Image (cartoon, rainbow, N blue to C red; front, side, top):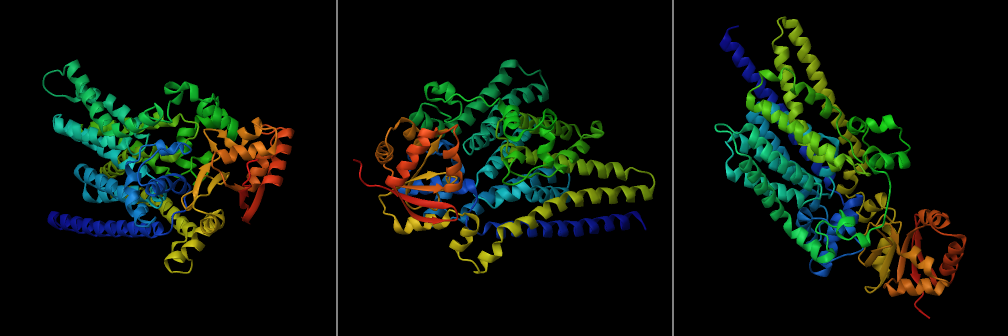
Length: 560
């Protein structure tokens, strides 16, 4: 076969592969949309992202909600959720959240297509969209996919800024997206911090021609952080006016030390040693374990799942790196630096979650695809045809296995989410939610039988208040329990009643198994406290409705 014939066969194979990859990508997107098409039942959606937006709608605008610390978080995406919620639709916010995963996928495709080829770009998109934590976020009402998109857009614009000779408008555009990342979630401030350091460094290192001046490099960095913080400023101004702390509740010990409760968990390692009883070597391996041991809903195992090949394949990207195009070689270094530094900065927190490091996922996807491409190049240089075939088959198996891990997770989500039971009409909305939220029957009772002026105190119900149409408050805010404080300073049951009524409380919603253990724990309540609380419940509290361990009770009306 001649050269033209071989070239034609290669082109045909590439076209077939492109069609297959596009088909897989389409199937993946449809699968995610089906999983997202059920009523929201995830914790953070019901506690925070939907709940706060619903309260704003009920109030007629944004207002301070002191018993919800997370209501002070930046809300760029949450404000978008107000639109479908105002129309009575709580499923569309999932689609909005997933749209940011799709936008990130577009950035991945565009970048990889320029640096590699269309098929490698499609592989990167499929790998990204099918990563377990991305799938999980795509079918829930969170904000992390917005953070990922804005952070990645900012990073790619910085790379473009370097490539195009440091054009000012690209730097400003990068800073705008960086500010939007910070306004989506506080973790975006890590991106602001890192890129503010990156800008003068990369300008000094990669500027061609005359040697860049120190003040020019610093000036670019100052411009970047100024624009980013200007975009983020509305949230800082709001919080400063409300609390005196522009990034409340972060660093409250600096802005309002008089309001801070002293805690000493020993940081990440002390916390994990105390709570999870992990050994020193288990904690030393945490940066590796994050990629291998993730589990949904389990804080010990990072409340999310990654793909182990996200840490394995990038190593291949740096094999024989001196042969790379200088531009790609520099970009690989920057991608790796961002991933490592963001991970290191976000890592040292007592409640490590995969979501908190999610902006590192696209850079690792880029490096993974570069790694696959590098291995294809190395294998193609082998002299023996048999060795080339064996190498390509081995590489294909590795890529297939990495994608099969993601596929297995998606199938597991179909078993857990069970979307077809709802979409087919087998289960109504209420029946579907009942399957996942045991407190929901009690909440429906409250919505139906309690008055519009009643106010419910939530105790150990996970603060999931989105489906509650009556006014509610949390018992515990910043480790302070209202009920416990009242018990400690009361001598008679009537004083507890007076304290609750003084806070406008008319009813209590309680998860009784946890509540009973809490009351019997002498670290929280003495024997005297327990007896006082028992007399209070016996004489001044009436149980109205109880199901699945949750009960709603009415407080006595009299304050005498």
